[in-house]
Length: 292
Image 1 (tube, one colour):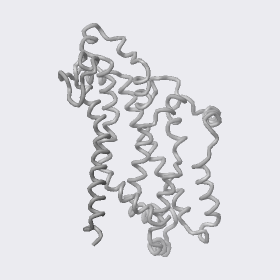
Image 2 (image 1 turned 135 degrees about the horizontal axis):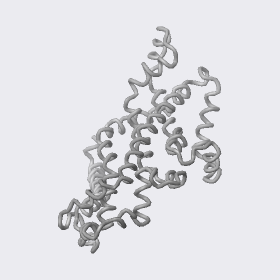
Image 3 (image 1 turned 120 degrees about the vertical axis):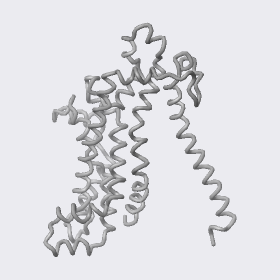
Image 4 (image 1 turned 180 degrees about the horizontal axis):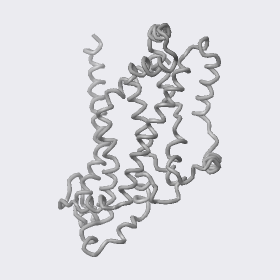
């Protein structure tokens, strides 16, 4: 058997070691940030913290959770992620279903498919896009964080490839029983497409949760920033919330520990959700690539 050969075993050992090293490189920065967030001010400011807290302290988390701007940014990000992911899923379903049909069934299917692919490769640029957002009145509104990225061509392609792998007999049986296309989509296709749905939902959730540039570009009021934009302004600029601290707080808290606490809290939701969707993610990617 090929898996018992020496070259295969050598490759397997090398591949395992490489993946372990890659995993360590990915998790070490997060552990360091967590350690800094639990460290005392003097150790954090002196850059003495590595992978273990120096002088355990919860002051940074207390200060962070008492910051109304930070809490509001979390709410904006949660709302954006839930609504944005829901809209993206709905549009992806409605676009992928007809595009998964053969050209003989859906006339012009190839033209629409190429239009989607063209929009994925080429775009008008940042300035024209900004002007469009301004003209349609989305500036300084919550919907500017959701609607511009509602259609993701890559996710549509993943979904239509999965739909094309579903046996046609299921659809034919539903049509014979009198079901229309919408009933067939929501009652037949989607219930058996959970791995693919979980995959595109995870992609969309990560996009909305980590997106920061659109908030910085289209929102003028910092109080309306989503969490990623808020963290970007805190990390790049100076956290003005520390200016209101009394001398006792300034002795116990540093900007370094507060920033570390904010970064870890901001990354926690995705870290919690991802393990539950990982098995669907891998399966969905595999099934979605069987029939291109």
